[in-house]
Amino acid sequence: MESVEVYILGQKYLIRGEESPEYIKQLAAFVDEKLREVYSNSPGITPLKAAILTSLNIADELHRTKNKYDSISHSIKTIEDGADSIIKLFE
Image (tube, rainbow, N blue to C red):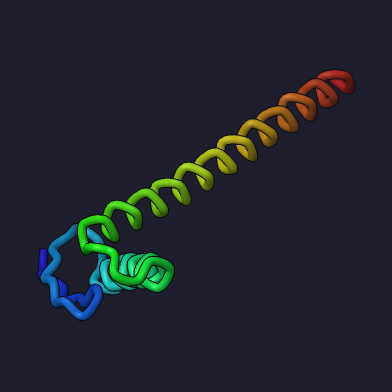
């Protein structure tokens, strides 16, 4: 497991992880982008508050995506069950 050098808000961090260096860099770029959005909307905010707001924004995005995924998975299951019922009619 190698260390990957990333920059978030101009600060260098060495990150070690199981994923590829490219993936870790993508994650760091995503966090950097989200932090910059918070700073642009709230100039003068403290770094800790910016990190907390960014974490909440990312958590919100994660939960919304998970809810959509769960809804789609449920819809697919319903369609599959319906298709199975139709197939049984022809057996």
